[in-house]
Length: 367
Image (cartoon, rainbow, N blue to C red):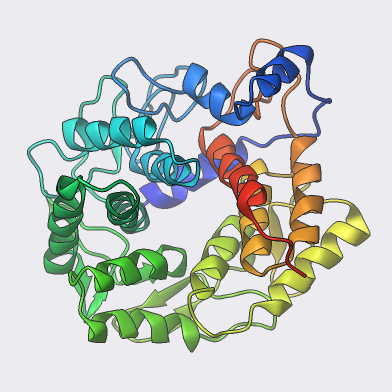
């Protein structure tokens, strides 16, 4: 299956160059006490049926393995649910649950990774990382807002499907095609969401032996002194590496690693050195010499880096990252609060900054 890599090329390729300072319209929104990034998303990135559009501008799909235009992704749904949890927005979470059950899982026991703008499913494949993010959010939501046992029940059903259909050699793998029964040999390390797995363990949905398998996978995996591997081959037990590392992948892995006792100081120091020496953090780096291989900056990278810094209890660095992130906001007055470049944006490049902004708001003083 090629859709995961193709999908990533699209949202990483939609880069955000240095923007201007925030406009008057955004300042007015801030004065009302509402997060401007969240307002941009709710005003511009929600389809009429309640699903979340992938791009600001509509476009026809030319490849079923890629997301285009106003098509909706389970990836976006999961991050939006996490944002609702972070901001204690019950209404947004309930609407997300409705979209999940009405469209993404309608008459199925699994989550399709992509929907057309009208909410129809034209694929029969899930996406492990998205699934675990949504499942973990459902369990956490039921803890925050009591009286929603249906959320935990749905999480249990979805987890049961994953464990019964999407495992190979004792490990969950990147996807399962429920039509062709295709199953890969790889587990991308960015998908090993230990936080979600821990919630399943605490709910009795996952057993300790299974949880420990993934905990050990991250705790004991090799690295090159800064960067982590890309994936684990579940059949031959080998880790695989990309020649050029994507910082989005690396930061997702790092935050999952934060659930273990493994040190992440090397990656943190690398990011701090890059920001200090170059004034920015690039989207991709060459593994062999740690040099940037792209010129663009990504708002998604900064959003994740902020969350990582807060997790590492380095609030001063998180504040510096956030300051740089805010310079990437678009100057188009029609879209105040959004990370918009040339009249378009990927919702991912707004959701992760939103989560970073929430992390800054609730983060402690740190080091």
